[in-house]
Each structure stands twice: as C-alpha cells, then as structure tokens.
Image (cartoon, rainbow, N blue to C red; front, side, top):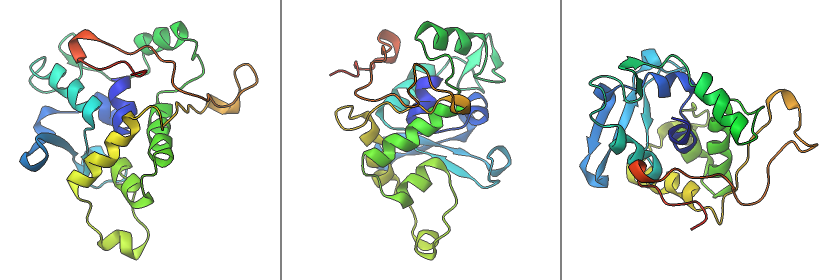
Length: 195
C-alpha cells in the first residue's frame, strides 16, 4: 500500500478504500485507471487515478485477492495505513517520524523534480485548477501516464520525505541523494531502484 501511495499520490483513505468497481479500462494505454467517486474524494469531485508502471504492477498483483477491495486484510477493508504494520516497517528502516501522508508529498515532490508541469501535477494529485487555462485544458490520460512514470527514473528524482512536525532526524529535515530504500521483489515483479 505504501509503494502504491508513493506512486499515485493517493491519500490514506482512498488507498484503503480503493474498490475494484472504480477501475476503468483504457485500451489506448493498455491498462486501466481508477476513478474515485466524488463522495469518497476530499474535494468532493471525481478523481482519476493514473497508474504508473509500479502502481500498475501492484494492481495486477492484488487482482483476485478480494471481490471488492483492492487492498484487503484478512478479507476486510483496511481502515488506515497508519497501523501496526506501518509503525513496525518505518521503525525497521529508521524512518520513525515519517507519516503516511508524507508518501503523497514525496510523489508530488518527485513529479516537480522530474519537470512535470504544474497543470499535470495538479491533475495527478487531484488538486483543483484555479487558472482559466487549467480549467479548460482536459488532461490526456496517455500524457499523464508518461508524466507519472517519470518518478520512476531514480537517476533524476530523489527521495524527499518531509519529517513530521518539523522535527529533524539527526539534524536534517530532508533526506537527500539517491534513494536507499530496499525494494520489494518477487510477487510484485518490481525492479530494484538502483538499476
């Protein structure tokens, strides 16, 4: 779920409550997107969730585990990512003060560092566009997929995690340099970030 969140920018509630019924196939790009309905999205309008290659591989691995929920646990919907598993995982890798919402911030920062235009960042994050040109410009799903995949180029993007409550770890408020995060292998079929 954390890997999915850091690759889509989805908020905790939307990752936990992601439903298969929200999946919509987009044949032109050879995969699907999820449309989070307005009632379930913070801004109370439908949000299209673009699945970059990492998020798409996670969705494929989750398919068939539950008829309703994309991320079930013991046959039920998970209420929050901020649970014992999250607490243990972040302690194990030395990221104790990192919040679940920081995954969304990291996705947004990686998009910006990769040079993704503001209008596309807004579309990928589900932010309202306040400019007239942004209002009339409709986002192209294929272009947004290309933009979302830019965060996977780890030679360009860096791991940037905002530390909760402004408290620094070892005197540093931000992590810098190439990501040094162990990647999952096997079932998800993801490549190591160092390659």
